[in-house]
Image 1: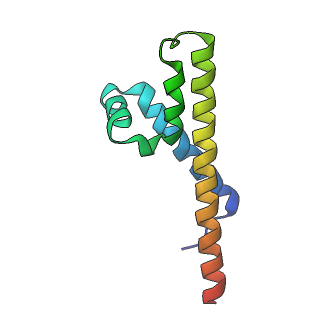
Image 2 (image 1 turned 45 degrees about the vertical axis):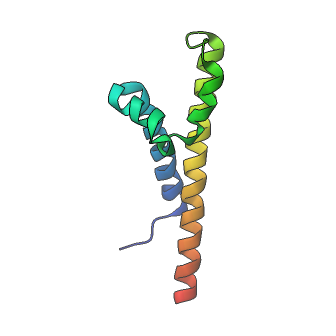
Image 3 (image 1 turned 90 degrees about the vertical axis):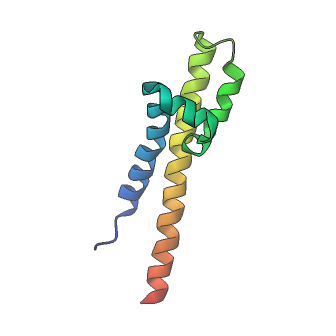
Length: 94
């Protein structure tokens, strides 16, 4: 198996970072799971606490958008770090 390029790994991480919020807004059972025990799918979803009472205001939408963007960046950074660690291990193994 060929080792993926860095940009593909980061893009995969970004897509995975968008999956949590997408599932949150598309499925009621998943929404209950993410807010209950599965906060790890959307770790930056904790930021949404400040929007309680302002869910349909511009402020609420802005905070939700920032939270989603931060989640995408967090997953992309985690995937970049994982890619880098595996790259170093592969270099040392040669």
